[in-house]
Length: 474
Image (cartoon, rainbow, N blue to C red; front, side, top):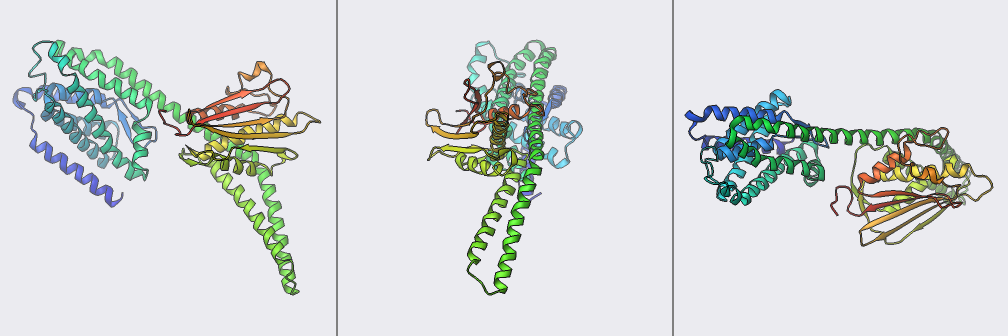
């Protein structure tokens, strides 16, 4: 743990203790049973928790109960209710270390304080609706802007405080943590559903008491199961993409090893010639020997870098020059035996802008398409074998399109609609995961991949990617 993170955690804990000492629950002697009951309600809501997509934090279903608590009992009681339930849940349910448990309880105090004060500032009764219920239902409608302000402050303060700890502990950029762990479409939709349940909980409780709370167990459970399935799906997809990459890497390993050996033989031979010419005081061919050694070393470096990029498991979004990535991928596969005798026709538009993407995963898509094209043409004799790769960009919409075509026999119309299905393959030794994995990678980047095969003209695959990258709302 860094010194900066220790200072931050200590500061948050100290501020929480100060607020707890200044804000004591009103009418504690007569209402302590209700405060305890709501702490248990919030604790039960904390049991519906999931790790965030990156694994750096957790997200629970407690926001509904927390918001309902501050609306019913006011900010003074709510900070005590939520702090105690969060601490107990973190230690006994989620089994987190004491440092994280204390931090989560402390940041919940700051979050509830900020949200509650905004709520009161916007006209909400400070003691809450449990003590001062609205005289007529119309008063509830007038408090809609107040509720929206409460939700906005709750969400922003909570996310901002937690993201600092996650960012510093995992050494990930702060904005990246916010974007990947909380501010993505599925998480925002779940949050919206939980937030909108809070006023219904308040109305139900004020109408029929604690029995009304039981009506919300089912929807909370449904939202929890939906979030759990989404997290499991993302994890399974990432593992499948990684497994497919490792399978393709193993398939290429023998050919790449053979090519690297040939380059080492060339380097060793030229080095011996350099030594021999130097001993004979003959320097006419020194430049030529050195140039060949340099070229072979550069080719080995390109292949090694390609293997490392191709093997990377985690999603690493960065600025990518698509044309440069295509050229590197072509140089990576060109020495392999399956590409012997194949011509490359590269039609890369100049001035194609960079996009935000994971270069390793996009390289996997390109290599899958190249290998499929080479295999398709290997089955056709007596025909010129050409792989055409083109790229171009469009400003409206802001997208880049890459097309990989071959001069093989094409894909039958009955099969072209199934090429992206898992396990579907027309190869005798194929496993059927190459194109399905490519499809998942492209869609995870917010793009599309389509297959086209006019009769007698080979097959073409069109990959369209947004310039703004994965997670973009454009």
